[in-house]
Image 1: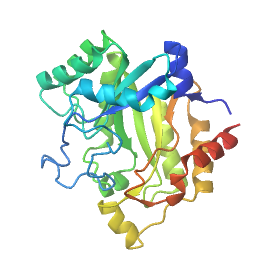
Image 2 (image 1 turned 45 degrees about the vertical axis):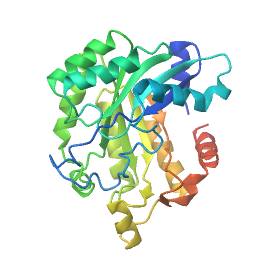
Image 3 (image 1 turned 90 degrees about the vertical axis):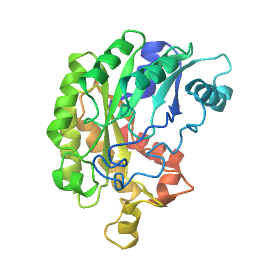
Image 4 (image 1 turned 60 degrees about the vertical axis):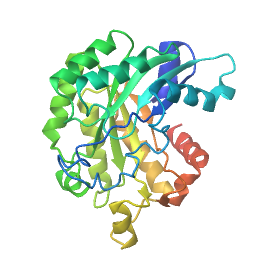
Length: 291
């Protein structure tokens, strides 16, 4: 099966291997500061899905340099990097603060892409203007956490916005020429295989540039963990997941970039599924299924 991987896309675009550096800029989220809720999404860890980001105690430049050191053995002759603002909601701050943080990242000579993870309901026109401005300096990617199109699941995970908010955000981003990637969680409690494929199909039809398929992880300290430990749901087996990803990718347009097929759960706080800890094996199984 032909699919367009992120690694392939980056090599085509930049002519070299490109690594992602996860950044924690010290943001919060409307699901945590009381604007919508104080508990966060049901699956979200205390780090706001930024378990692999550097500490926000470091400046943006310091975090980039630390990230470079992590992979320098793989890049002996130097290389290019994506500055990935990952933890919490990375457009949820006054525009001048955002401008300062984004500018520091995008001005680093080794950064070739500014990637910003956020919520569709945190993209006001002033933020969109800033992103458009930054996109004239270096490519800007916006990663939207959709997770599911099903309202019952959205309520369960405490997403905090309706599907039409996502639709509007995508239209605005694409009208400004900003590359848009969408996060989808596979394995949410109560969702059938067809429910999950419906979400993938919706994303495929929405005109975005890329997708991240994320295996549901149950992490310590989350409300999802409480439901799992109470026996409210079961996680998928590896075989079920691999089969689902195969069918999901068949739905996607051939030109859509697949930024992720599984994802990592921090092993220190991962409760389930434990098979996902062997990422090499999972990726090998996915590769076999897709060839």
